[in-house]
Amino acid sequence: MTKPMTITEKILASHADLEFVAPGDLIKVRVDLALANDITAPLAIRVFHRTGRSQVFDPRKVALVADHFVPNKDIPSAEQSKIMRTFARDQGIVHYYEPGDGGVEHVILPEKGLVIPGDLVIGADSHTCTYGALGAFSSGVGSTDLGVIMATGRTWLKVPPSIRVDYEGKLRHWVGGKDLILYTLGLLGVEGANYKSLEFSGETIHALPMDQRLTMCNMAVEGGAKNGIVEPDEITMAYVSGRSGRKPEVFRSDTDARYEKVLKIDVSAMEPQVAVPHSPDNVKPVSQVGHVALDQVFIGSCTNGRLEDLRVASGILKGKSVAKGTRFIVLPGSAEVYRQALREGILETLLDAGAVIGPPSCGPCLGGHLGILADGERALSTSNRNFLGRMGHVGSEVYLASPAVAAASAILGRIGSPDEV
Image 1 (cartoon, rainbow, N blue to C red):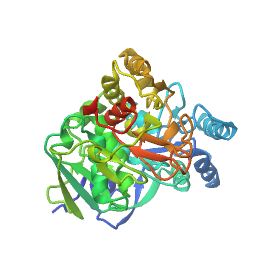
Image 2: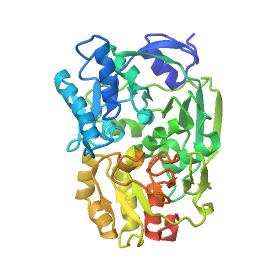
Image 3: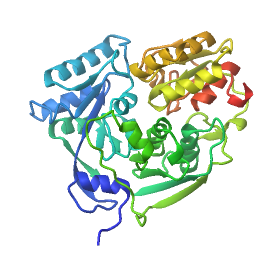
């Protein structure tokens, strides 16, 4: 008789060529896609050369994306990008992207069909866990591991125990995936899922569009999780259809699979959530945040820089203006998002409201460029982290929320609910 497994365990077993794996097992797995960016790739490339290999394991299964410091903000970042660009050219890397046809790595990889259900993806970036929204196992590693993976196409993993989070009920207006994951982080804490798999399930999740599932899995790592994942369904298959020529492999958790614990969350009374400084798990309902005046609002990043995020913001800002004294920065997550937002008039609406539209880039999220905070400044961001000094000066403050709350707050000049505008 086949032993029961979770979806994460099944994907790992398949890629280890094993019939069964259990939490705690150390396994060696095949990697379907190895990912690095302009910060992590140069280190990984150095390690790759030290392995003695002359060619990556498969130039079609390595993705290199310039997104953190692009367009290059200074000479060191230009040198970093040059190392990656040269390596991609010399190795014949098929999936190399920089401004023009690229964007933020965790936005463009699903968009371009590079990840499909059943894949195992390893990236030298902590938010590689984003792709679990597609029913794939995806996780971040250090550049040393990634360099070896580029050489061999394999890595070792310890099978994580799973926590299932069941969301039930109908979401209220203005409440979505960002609010669900912030609320969940408030329950779990930033260490509550350390080296565990967070499996998001329930009727609420399977009614969510793909962009909001991507947001949730993106922030699984903020609870310490090894990966976040959602079982594939009709929405998943509709999303990947036409994006990839590969055939998806659909895995689902067995009904009697073993979980370390199961959390049940009724979403019916949930209001928009805000993470206040200086941690993603320091979460409050927007109505309980109090009066927080804002110097800057940022919409973008691998968490909420997708087309639907810009649509929501545009709908709230149409015919309105950003508050005097508040900077409003919008970075579309990819060239395709930018292009479609232009076609739909979204960018014009945001510009009319007083937004600054920048190129697809991680930018302010990591305190990189295009929106650094000064001492004493406060920002509301749709990104994933609000640690001390995350977006600039250690004397600044970062609050996290959804694009809906961000748009409303830009109008108000303080943190507030869309219902107020």
